[in-house]
Amino acid sequence: MQFNQTMIDEFTLLAKFPLSTKMQGLKLHNDAEESLKQAAQRLFEKGVIDSPDGGYLTELGLDLIEHVTVLHSALGS
Image 1 (tube, rainbow, N blue to C red):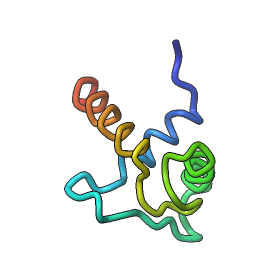
Image 2: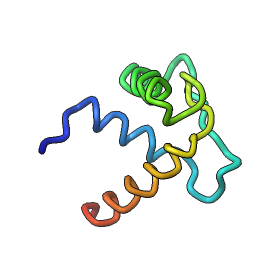
Image 3: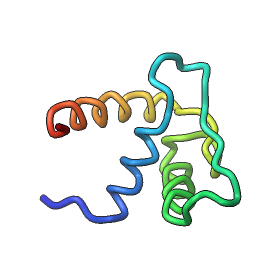
Image 4: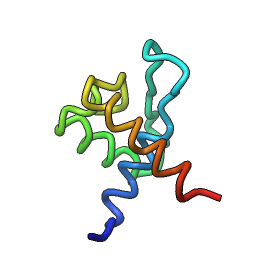
């Protein structure tokens, strides 16, 4: 199993969501990196976030962010 750049971009975007509360979202602006804007569109299409420019995490998104957090903690330095 390998992580490709598309997946890494999606992980990166998910990691930007606030973890302290489910009531806070994320808004990507027009000047955001193109890779993050594309990642947001893909995550929206997959039902992970509720808006193509960020928004809030869905239930699936909340589950995934927990896994991203564990991966980051385990592999980060």
